[in-house]
Structure formats: C-alpha cells, structure tokens
Length: 368
Image (cartoon, rainbow, N blue to C red; front, side, top):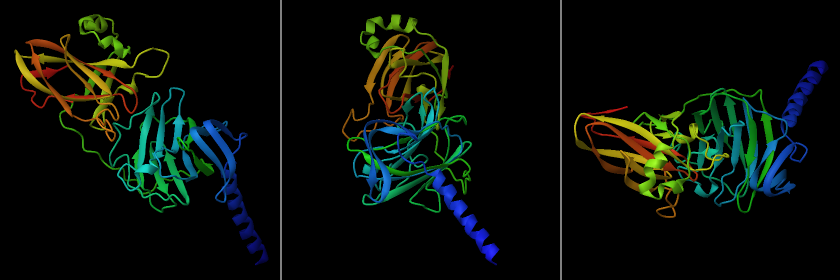
C-alpha cells in the first residue's frame, strides 16, 4: 500500500512539474521583447510583464502544433491583444486577438491570417471569424488556443467547450510565436505556457459563411506602383503600359480576392497600388451594370478611360466606419463589341488589400 501511494505521489508531482516547466518565465533570457515600453513585475498575484505597444516572443522557439496559453489583465479601451503563431520569414501567420473595447459585441474577438504583413480583418469578419464575449476588467482572463495541422480552437477562461473552431488560412508550416499586449497604456501578460504535445481538437465545428453569388472568381494582378501615378488621368495609358502581369488571385470566403496573397505591400519596392484586371467579351455594343467592392481606395478604368474613383478606407466616411468588403458600389459600363479591358486600380493602407465584383446580368458577355 505504501509503495502504491508513493508511486501515486510521484506521478502527481511529475505532472505538476511538467505543467510548471511548460510555463516560460517572463524575462529577457527567455523572451525577445520588442515594445515601446515594458515592465517585468509582480502584478495582481502573478509574475507578469506590462507590455505597451509591442510584442514578446519566446527565444529559440518555432511553433507548429500544440497548445498556447496565457493570462491577460484587460482594460476597457481600444486595444488588440492576442497571439500570432506560425509567423514565417514571408510575414505570413495566423492570428487571434481580442477587442476589449467591444465587450458583448459580435466583433469582441477576431481570428484571421496575416498575409505578407497585412491583417485583412476587412475580409475575414462575421461569425466564422469572431464570437461575442463579455470581458471582465477586474481579474485575469485566461486564453487557450489549440492548434493541430490546419485546425485551431480557442477557449477563454477555462471553458470546457471551444468558443470558436476555425480552419487555418495558410499551408501548415512552423514559424515564430508572438504575444501582443496593449496599445497606448499597455496591458499585463502572465503565465505564458506552450505545450507542443497537447494538440487534441475536439468537437470541431467551424461556422460556414454564405458566399456571394455570381462573383468574378479570378483576377489578373499587376506589379505594384505608387498611388500618386493615378492623379493625372491623361497619363493613365503610360502607367498601364508599364505594368507587368505575373499573378492571379482568386476569391476567398466567397466574398473577395486578397491581393496580399501575391503582392507584398511593405517591402523594398515602392508603391501601394496594383491593377486588378478582367477581360469582358461582349457580343454587341451594350451597357452593363457592374457591382464591385474594394479596400482601401479604387479607380475603375474601362478600355483606358477612368469611370469612377472611391474611398473605402477605415473611418473615411464616419468615425465608426470599418471599410469592410462587399458589393457596396456600382457603375454602368458602356461596352464595345468584342474585347473590353476592365481595370480596378486598388490602393491599400491597412486592414485588407481586396477586390471583388460581379455582373448580375451575364447575357451577351463572357468574362475571361
């Protein structure tokens, strides 16, 4: 009996030791810290880091599959704390973050890909990518994310059931792991735990998203150029003729095509604008209504002539305006018989470099 009890005690201590070893002490030995400011201190009973405007990353660690856990002491202010995982040298990664200022709202949380450094929340929105949550601001919030191959789940405050299950956006590839804190005034993080052996996905039920019918499924995309080249319409032909056309992008989520899948906004090549192109083959001279969407700004050009210029940037129309992508704009196209070249010059700041469009009436035209 004594031997059995001793074995049980040893087993319990071993489990506790393993759990303790999974928690990474927060210090400059174990983490790379890249922030406006930080303080490592004892806070509300926990060994924590006060992180303002930046990230911390476990040193000498890559992450593929497993469980990521941490505690955060939230404030009711605009901030986007969370975790970035599988970050590659191409700046592609998966991201979960919280919006503590949106407590109780449908967009209190967010999952999405980072693609060439762009977090396209203007495309990846709705119940498939967010869930309602009522945050607390006088206690620690526990976050747990389980990752396995192309699947992930998130649990808040030790819930037994996942609050959200989702399919990951990038090919399965190990990468760097980052934790984000607060913005202006900072937030405290504690009890960061990584266990690469805990990766069980249970009751996986991702939310479906209803696609928009009839969208143009594929666009040709030019190389990048400065937006200011669009200012003089008499010089558009020269700008168009100078472009290279090496890439194609396809509609994602049944909503829009993500330009940042192929073009990097923030690299050494200057510019924030590309042309997205389709060819319309018309069997006669006719006028067709073209519905479209873009992010952040666009110029619509048919057969070399500009028809429309618009701004869909975050907060461009009022202080609550998000600039989410959809078929919110339209223009009539006067088509000639034969081939017509339709270009959308799409410029980006942040939030998603996106384009979408459709013809509700395809009679007499073919899209190439």
